[in-house]
Image (cartoon, rainbow, N blue to C red; front, side):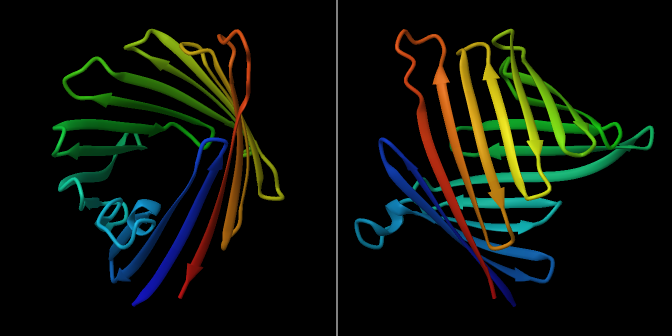
Amino acid sequence: MAMKASLKGKYDADKTSGIGSIAFNAGDIKLRATMTDATLVAGPTLNGLSLAVEKPGSFIVEYNVPKKDVRFQFMNTVRIAEKPLNLTYIHSRADNRTILDGSLLIDSANKLSANYMVGTNNCKLKYSYAHDGLATFEPCYDLAKNTWDFAVSRRFYSGDTVKATYQTSSKLLGMEWSKNTKTSGFKVCASVNLADEVKNPKLTAETTWNLEM
């Protein structure tokens, strides 16, 4: 039975947090336990602990131990005019919330996706265009807010990725630099609200370590 472990730390001006997970592969099924710093800082507790059973590409059942909440996620792929349509159904029992997500891969460069929360007017439509497999442009329309969000990213052969985002509803401008390898990764983010009179940027950093045994 193969085991994978990961540890992620997040640092910003207000607080430092961490999250760790251990996953076991049992044939087609993956068993995963996830803990946050709340699980260990004040002594071993159930705070921040979740357990999950997953069959990649098919389903995920996750149990939040302290909240006694179960989250179901089911995935499937169908073909429309020979194009793959990826469908995801997510339901959280505690807050009785259901989310439907779908993405249609038109070709290697173009993709359409939609995200809808059942019973509300929360729906987002996104178009993604990838140029030469390195640069990506993603406009997203929020039907509930009647606003647009934009994201532009550029991936380099070194493994580095630079991404810029802008949310028109909140006037939030963000920049992100990340680099990932098989065993580790890091991400540095900076954001500033252009609507604020004093535009103080917010900085965060994340590091991830992966171990496979």
